[in-house]
Image 1 (tube, rainbow, N blue to C red):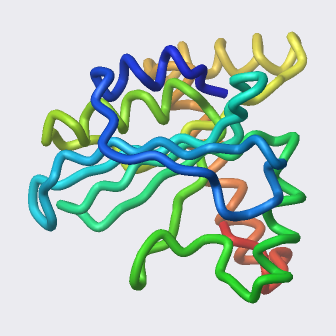
Image 2 (image 1 turned 180 degrees about the vertical axis):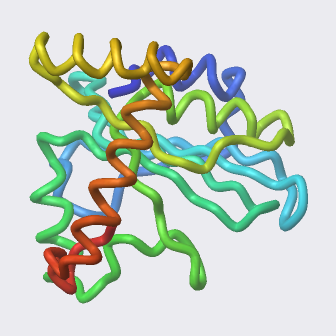
Length: 181
């Protein structure tokens, strides 16, 4: 998860708003800081962070790309279940960023930072989502050798393998209706 220091550096220490976080899922000492560039629509973006004023532990971080109508966030895994439960109890959509735009949840800090920096700079960025895989050494070695044979990167090989597996599962009808793949 991002740290307060990393967030402050990401927004160039520019804070435009702040206040107590209105939900209870993150505890009584939760506070929200926002950094908005003041532009609605094309060229506009904002960042938000929710954290503990006591421990400085970060519970959630968001970036909103108003140019491309995209929103990304990371929720601390320790608090995700409480957040989802409170959303349900409030009858609120846990995924709605604004209007019809839904959050894309990210798990890899570098993914969040890369997207955030590109959004802030007004640059195009990769909208795919990074994920970490913990593969056994023998499988990793086998994949690396196969990638070498195909003259592609290991990352590209694994992406192709995962996409192929998803298509295979879809073709066999092995996904439940609630699966978001």
